Image 1 (cartoon, rainbow, N blue to C red):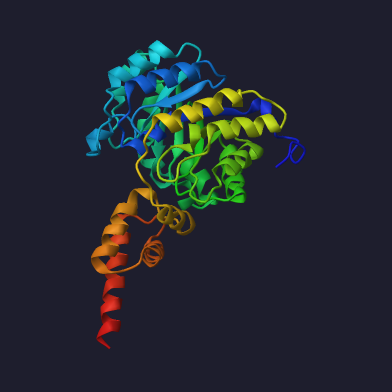
Image 2: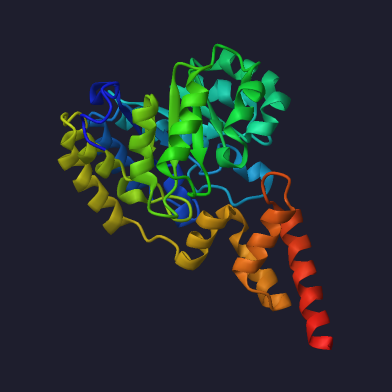
Length: 345
């Protein structure tokens, strides 16, 4: 995309939210060194980035769902953010299944400015009360439509019809890292018909996160997420420093890509990410399986002697919308039975 391709796209309206200290926590199993966190927050505060997301990758109080807790407590996150951020607002992620609204109130009392509530589109009508009550406790509440691509774009208006108008914005989320620019444009355009502020959160399974973020801007999104060095869950996210650089190439160095490039290098040399299976990331991006299910898929493939692509494709074929654990297990059993029948001939 060039600056002349779409006269409605103005770099001066673009905003980048940095989620390194939230989505990036997945890459280190939610264990972050406090000294690194403090320095990164301090240095981010010196850049034009004005929104920073921190905390457990899955959302605050994720340990209540049984997942490993972050080594930094919620109180300590508040202390670090308050100490290091003077010009930049900070927020956290939440999910209705385990993130309590009483805790949201406490976090906002400690200086948190925004919260992003993650809900799959089909489940939004079931959590309207949670969203409404969240807007009464926090000034900026964003609705993140997790696994957006699993729902046809044309169905979103009905699913979002009763979302409280007090929400600050709604995010299109490419959880699988499978969207192409045209997909992003279509989803953002549909959501923007109902909500003036649309955001985009892209994963990089197919190497499209940066391009998709720019496509989101072109379609009218006002905010996109990035992580420094792209570090994040699974294949990672759009790169904060690259997004800033692209915007500079389009005419405005609003986010100081040079400083962000230095911070990306700081993250690269300071963190020791867990190893990721690139094969699974690409398969998941193309076929449409979320990275949270990769360990289960690999386990079933080893136990039943089936191959990951076939299992993923069979699970997606069984799912009415989004393939989950039940479909993956059922698909594995079917493939194993089919294989046994063939061998018995």
